[in-house]
Structures are given as structure tokens and as C-alpha cells.
Length: 378
Image (cartoon, rainbow, N blue to C red):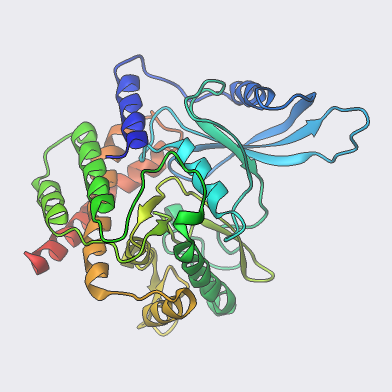
């Protein structure tokens, strides 16, 4: 697997072998944040108005204002967000990789501006990064509320008309990005067209997580991992893959119906665009339209319209065979998350223990989905 991922997983096991950790207090988060900023700037400043961001199942987030104390600067307060690892997470990922990919895609798609990263938790309570605050909402204020983590969000016809196409076009822009021209991203290992090493590394990544986190045997996971390695497709085009591109992971402006920020890049990889296409179109992330018949991907637009617009916007093809492969892969990693890691961390080791407990419950229907997919190909 990739060296940076190996580093993260080793750190997870070291924490597990020591005393049980607690999430930081607000004061501790402010102190760490102050140390991180001070290590990078040579000006007097103050961290003001800190408050927790609630929501999300994997990371601790604190909003605050950075006030420059230079007597003559005249600069307004800067709205920022601290994103930091909790003591345990449903997905253990690298803040360095997230920082690098956010910087690489900024200017191509709307993302927060990244300022500083503490990849090893030298200054903060745990590894974390600081980026700019972006206004917007994650779900409409006038329609039925979503379930946990964006599932079942209902936007209504008016918002769908603008937000749906924007959702597709932003994904197309990510996948069109010239990876070779992105600059230095040392947290990611090189990927080449014609190779299937990238997806095999991912299968190995999540199989290792399964072996380290699971509380009981579940042979279907091993069957899936073996099939995924044996049938790993070779890349026809190297893309930045968001890894969790879906409703709930973007902010938007309700007045314009436009996306203001794409969030949660922690699972990003360099690989096959079909990984994002398959994940975004998952049945558990959408719902039926008002006619009771048409499935709306992510609650935004019909599947056929999604794929047709994606091909037109990206200039890249959608291969049904690759989609099927990544349907299996995405179900596989979801089972690892829900039935392997979630039950282990839901005992209070995370700030979102209730959310993670709910996620562990939905692992069983996803496992049944994985079984059906494998039955079709075996």
C-alpha cells in the first residue's frame, strides 16, 4: 500500500495499544491551533470566537476567527476552520494527503483555501489542518431533513434544476484535471495509465483495516478482496478521485443553487474515475422523485441524465463494466467501514458515537448488496 497510508494505520495501532484517549476540550483545541499558526507566521495574532462544528462522522472541526494584532495592519478578522483527527475514527486517513489534494484542486473546483497542516500532531492534540471558512448549507432549509451524513436529502425541483447539473460538472472538472501538471503531492504515490496498481493498493488498504479493526469473522469480505484483486482493471485515464463524492459532502448557496465548496477529501486517491461515479450513484444515497418511480442520484437528478451530462462535460467515457467493478469495490469498503471499524469506535472513542453506531447498523444491508453483486460475477 502507499507509504503515507501505512504510516497512518501504524499510528492507529500505537494509539490502540496505549491508554484510552479523549477528545480535546475547546480550550485545548485553541491552544494547539495557536501553536500551529505561530510556527508558521511571524506576526502577533489572536484566536477568537472558537466554536465546535457539529456533524460529520469522522473528524473534529472548530470554527474560529484569526485576528492580526499588528497595530497598523487594518486587516479584518479571517474566518478559519480547524479540522483535526478524533481519538478514533470510522476512517483513519492522512491530513497531509487531504491538505495536498485540496491545494492541488483549488482553482479548478470550489474548495476551502488551505493554510497550514500539522501532519503528525506536533502542535495540535492530533494531526490536523487549518483552512478557510466557506459560507453555504449542506442541506436545504425548506424541505425534509436528511438522515445521517446526507442520506435521503430532498432538495425539491427548483434546487435540483441548478444544483444537479453543477454537481455533475464539478465532478467532471475533478476528473479532467491533469494529474501530471498538479505539482508536488508527496503524500501520494505515482500512478500510470495501463497499470492497475492503484486499485490493488486500495483493496489491500481496506483489507488491512478489516483485519486490524473487525470484531468478528465475516468471510464475504475476504471473498470480495480476492475477486477485486484478480479482476482489477487497468487505468485508461488517471484521475483525481474524491473518494466520497456525494450529497452531504458539499456546501451550496440556496439562493443561486450553486455549490460553494466541495468538502471531505480525506479519502482522495489517484485512480479510476468510475470509483466516484459508482459511489455517487449508490442507491442508499438517493431517493425516488415525486412520481414515485424515477430514482434521483443523491436526490439530485436521474441516473441516465447524470451519466450523459458527465460524458459531455468531462469528455471521458462511462464504461458499464468498470462501473460494475467499482460497485463491488465501493460495497466492499463500505462493509469494512460499517461492520469492521464502526463497531470498534462506537463505544465512545469518537465525538460522534451515536452516528457511528447508526452506521454500523446499515452495514448489514450493504453486505447483502455486496453478496448479490458477487453472485452476479462469480
